[in-house]
Length: 148
Image (cartoon, rainbow, N blue to C red; front, side):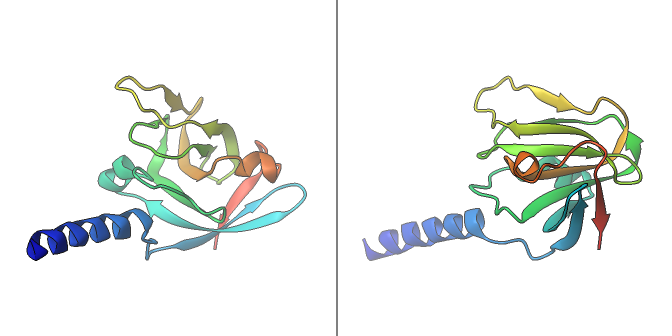
């Protein structure tokens, strides 16, 4: 019986650690608006596997964190929120990292059929942030991002 309880505890602890662990590879970026600059730490999604996983399964996203999706060349991209647990702001960036489009507070999808949120034009970067960040900080189309 003790072995079973210890095994269950170990599995629960491992799951808790994965759900709340902080990524180790964080990169500093700065969002530059007309009024201010905001420093953030982001994970980069470069490989197909990293892009497919994205922020899936996260229970929370701190206000100063996000994920930057990087594409080799500009393309029209589409995102969906299947298996997401939290809403996000999705910012689409051109080759110069200028914001070309913002999807505000995109909700998680908990059904089999999910909406997709696509760029209206080719982009080279996509930045996912905590839901509401863009409105709280008055981030607008035409503002830009700097990788530090």
